[in-house]
Image 1 (cartoon, rainbow, N blue to C red):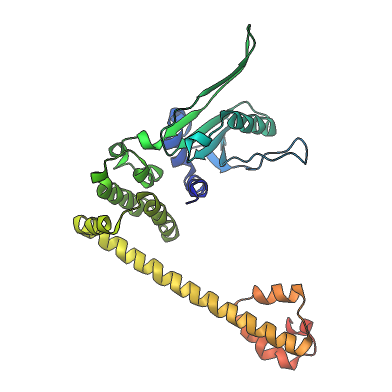
Image 2 (cartoon, rainbow, N blue to C red):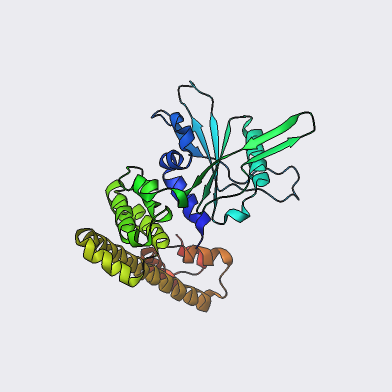
Length: 296
């Protein structure tokens, strides 16, 4: 499972809610006027041959009225706490500060499991401290799931399966997570996207899912109807894609039969056209004297 991509998508789709959960200590910043936008992930290199450093998700907070200076949040998700490097995070933050000419950079790390490593980096002599770096962190596995079971924060609700709970509570955790998704997100595409997120982290067995259906029949019916609709849309989309690919392959064969090997530009134009356009070109094919005449 690609945890980094899962959390990148989650944070980019719901940046305000993500910051409220993962950087709660800074929550006073998140008033209604603040504008939150993602910024360049790949950090600038000092030399082109240098290996680049890339953040999971850097976010910029700006106040349109200019009442406060811009603040940058450097968010990083760590699935395996043992792989986390405070030195790497410090580099990220210094790079961001230099790029945007600011010292207002807030490092935030999201740990799926409990973190027991260092939380402060100090560079010093015997006389002075010259660098004193620390970071905010959220350990999802130590947050009691009951704390957020009725939350209006969709990021918290989707992460209920990642929070602390007993094995016997897994069914309830799944139910409250999916209820949160259905009640807090009206966009069907995002529902489709994040039911997969909940399923991946809940990881219910067949027996547990059957128990969920018995214990929460109303919710299970809604989920079933949604899943069937999502599946039908996927099948229809797949059929349309298959038709397009078939039409494109047939037209390329006909073009090569009449005019010889297709150029890369011709191949790209054909493979990216929709079914209606491909059918029109196929009809015109034997009435033109050259490939270029087909496009007009």
